[in-house]
Length: 363
Image (cartoon, rainbow, N blue to C red):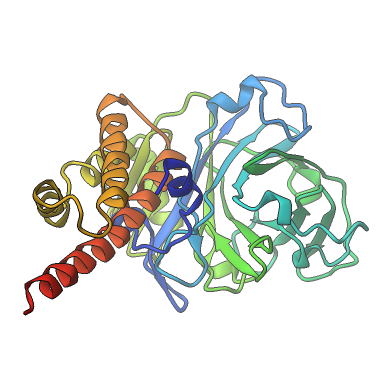
């Protein structure tokens, strides 16, 4: 199994443990909070995501397969910023089948949800009824509605760009379009970002806050906490989150290099992405250590070469984890996907070898 195949084959499912927020029916177990910082520079909406202003925006990944306790097999990432005129959104949708993207809809307000697309939800009043739905397909065709009114239409901009392994969206949504006069630090909105993937040949649904496969479920949306530029979490923010997002067992506040878990009493505990990745690759599982010894003694057993390549890739991830001083959520997503693939393949090789040994011992 080549390293390229390993990277392209990250389409298995996995439990994401503490990093993946859980939701059951409409009982919110963990609320998600994104710190939307004030932009410090100009943003050109062209789908490129290369403007320096984006460097100040927290990058969030770990989107889940909607309605399941698993990470979505094709990673996503999002960033948001705000200024006196707009809210800005940058989204990356990684895609292993770019040649199969579905982008049939070409007219504004057409059924773009039947294409590869993202869906953006804003609930500025945070009352779970007065929310906006904005959709963009991979070719930049848009749809918008307010309170399910498809005839509603206000100005906003979105551009997309296609790459070999991903497609990106960059959007600017005027505050006036969302019925907002101005934003102030500490404002708290409902928000969610979802994805419909058709490139696989079937409809797959991803979401940031898990809405249980019904994107229009505002009581399960995540939250935007508007903050000034260069903001750092402080006790007052923890208390506000615990108060404003009441009803969740815990709330997760995203940071550039990790996540704060905030309890209902406003206490916060930080977990870095780096620590989580290093935990994943701290040591090879016992089955891998046993197979190393078995194949060293008998290299002619089935899967010897396959296991050697798999083991080499695991060692490469270990080296990357050890060498990093910090990393983002996308790296963690890919690390978790590889780790699950590694363990699934390892289990297959292990029991096939055991069977081969058993057959060899039989008279």
